[in-house]
Each structure stands twice: as structure tokens, then as C-alpha cells.
Amino acid sequence: MHTLKKLQLFYPLQNILITQKFGENQVPIYKTWGLLGHNGLDCVRGKGFNISGSNVRASHDGEVTYAGADFLSGYGVVIRTLEQFLDIDGNPQYFKSIYWHLDPKILVRVGQKVKIGDIVGWADSTGRVTSAHLHFGLKPIVSGESMWTWDNVFQANGYNGAVDPEPYFFGISAYDHLVNPKKIEVVVEPEKIIEEKLEVIKKQISILEQLVALWIRLKNLLRL
Image 1: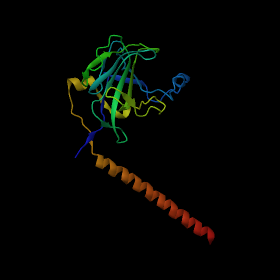
Image 2: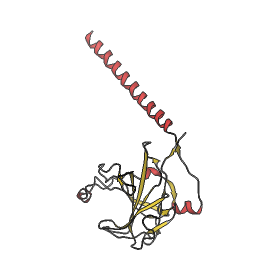
Image 3: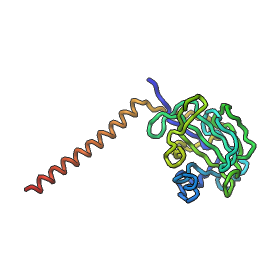
Image 4: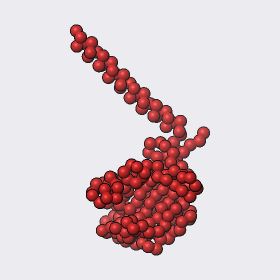
């Protein structure tokens, strides 16, 4: 029986502290960029740790599809998964993780295969930012017309195809996994997903039937 794993991400920073969550701060500048709100996680290191120069590590296994500069986001890296995983709704997707505002000396190159915990660069303040931090993003993607072309699945969702990464993390940094590997694998059988969705639909139908029966009873009472 074919099974798929749910995507599991490791924090790209050790002692991570999230300072701005996905969808927060619906400020005018985001509207200028065509966004409904923040389309990723802004991260620093916890109290007592300096973010500048901190190692930024790959949150999952994959292939580097971008390593360079962007006018707004500064220097960054994009890593694509090499296999499909289930999203939070149980749908199979390829994913790409995004790491922005890095030091210009990026440590990986396009086409390079990386593993969880590999250092891709160092945190910095490149791009249009007010202070040093790491912007981490996640986007479900689908293969385009050629092997090297990938499109965002939810490009028109108001966040340029990005989704909230937090549900995919489970509290372990990529560094901690590197020094003490833990086999964490969430496998979901497609048949089970269908069964669960059918159960939800059955409950909704049951509620609807009860409401219809109640409405009929009320209607009959009003006729008395």
C-alpha cells in the first residue's frame, strides 16, 4: 500500500525566537507588495544570542533551486523537496522553503543537494529590513512545463503562494537533529485520509438532517 509522509520541518536557527508570525501586521507596505499580510516567519535567536552571523541551516532534505540576491529581500536561498509530502489538509505536494536576509557569502549553490542541518548561510540584515533577522517561508509547489520549472500551488492566496510554516514544525532545531538524530516520521495512508473526510461529511449531513427535521416540526406546530 502506497503511503505518503506529512512534511516535517526543523527550525533553521538554534534557540529560535519567532518575532513576527505568518499573516501578522497587515500594514500598507504589504498591500504595496500585493500581500494580505506577512508571508512567512521572522526569526531571531533567543535572549542572550546574537542573530547576526548565526548559522542558518536547511529545515529539510532537498535541492537548492535558488541562491542569490533579491532587491527587496536581500540575499537568500530556496530549497525544494525531492519528493511529495502531505500538506495539513492531506493533499500531496512538493514544497520549497525560503531563507531571506542572509549574509552575501552564501554557502550553497543551485543544484546542490542538502540534508537537514546543513548550513546554507549566515543570518544578516540584507534587503529592506530594519534589523537583522531570518525570514523563513514555505510554499507548496507543482512541476511546470519542464523539469526545472516549478509553480506555486496557491499563488493567488494573497501571500504569493506562501503558507503558514508553523504547523509543520515540531519543536526541534536542525542543529539539534544533526547532533542527535531522531527518526520522526509521520505516515498517513491515503485511504485513512478519505475515511476521515467521509466521517466529517457524514457528521455534517447528520447535523443538516436534524436541522431539517426540526424545521419541519416547527412548521407543523405553526399550522396548529
